[in-house]
Image (cartoon, rainbow, N blue to C red; front, side, top):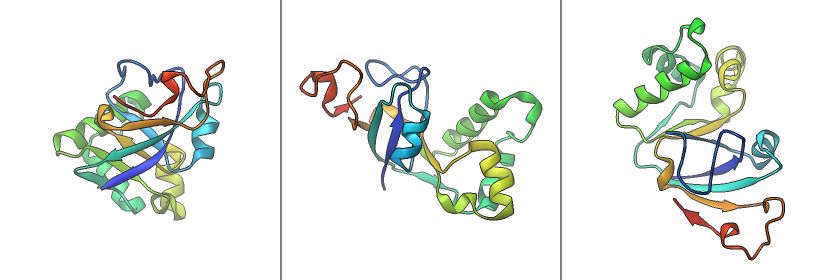
Length: 152
């Protein structure tokens, strides 16, 4: 299944060189990626998911979150995210999709939006994705090698 979205480059993510994180968070919309980006740098992302976990309803997300052991709020969000993504990997998934429908209704607002904020995809094998700049980095020429599509 081909997943497409946008990644806003932040202080904690890197497109050039090695990935520093085990997963990449990809927005469904360019606007949201732009909102979270540093210096307005946004990449279009294409990812061929072999086995995506699509959590289309708030109830699906809640069930997965609890099964992953991520429901304990006292442990901190970074630990919760790690438990959630590690759980999905153990089950053989290579992406987690939280589409707009996951955020609908009271449960979607209270649970999903309260944890993840906006619809997004989590790529669990980010090196397999293609990253295409949609906006040049400050001082980057459109003809520079790092402004062309790259496969990491």
